[in-house]
Image (cartoon, rainbow, N blue to C red; front, side, top):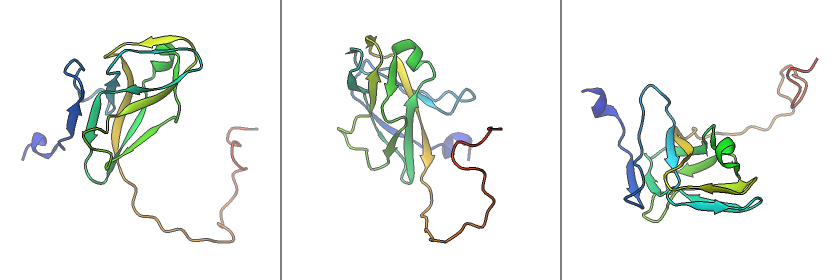
Length: 150
């Protein structure tokens, strides 16, 4: 069995024939670039959902993590409002188009097919059981935000 036989197939529905297709570039990064599927104008201080023009059927037991590209803020002045978008595998219907929720820090235009974000799939964490205790019996590191302080 070759490597191609073991690669998972990810079913994708495109909402536009004009949208450039998803591409996995082996050896560069395991994040896949996503593009705006239409031109979107934003005014400073405005919130919008930027349509990404795809619906995806992720493998059972996996979720998608959607984040901005490293150049997105520099190029467009937008921030993803929830920092990281989590797309679970049940969000896979024909109308479940992926979007990027953004806040504009300046007036900007994002054109159709501009690369604005990226995603990767991650296996769901195992089922966890929580146990309440009085002490963790470990040395304290100094509290949140204390690393690197003298």
